[in-house]
Image (cartoon, rainbow, N blue to C red; front, side, top):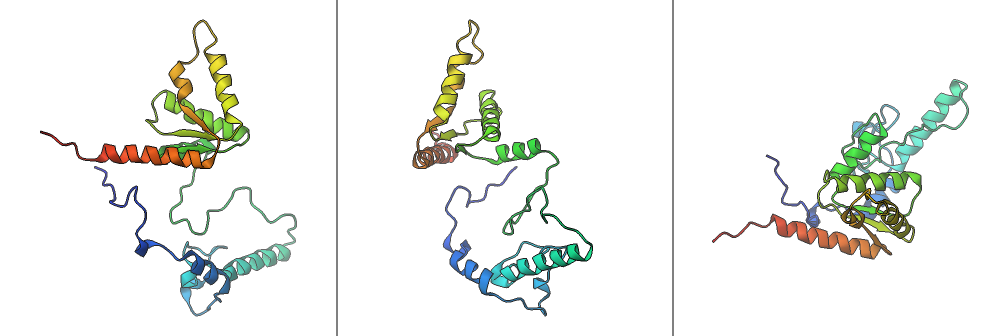
Length: 210
């Protein structure tokens, strides 16, 4: 049985919040203390995901890592851009998952999401949007809002409606074409998410029995 935290779906209490302004100040202003093992750089990165408030992830760490990489490359005659193809995990992420393929990563994101808000994008954005649309169509996802923001999306939905319903044997049902909700602004998208959350909270309430 999965235990749901009482904090789920609620704003974080004040005692759990981090002073973002202080966090930024400490990141730039705090100096490196060599006698503190918790501040040492390991494995080419900080070796952990800690906090500027403890001096364990600061601008000084980034400078030291950059200098070490430069010295290493120069000592071995390596030139060219010093970048890897894949993006590293954000320094403030507490838990990360590695995937061997793009699609398993996308699948995990889809399963973990309570709503999908899609901004204007390219082919990759359209691919992911249509995949989510199809998962909602076949009920592999249940009642998860798919919200398309911006002027590029109504044309796509209308194309699907006119093309797929235009055959003697339609390629989709009219209900399938109502799954995406097109809105003009982020405020409208957020309003839909709030409505969905209120509906979800109501469904979690105990059922009163006579």
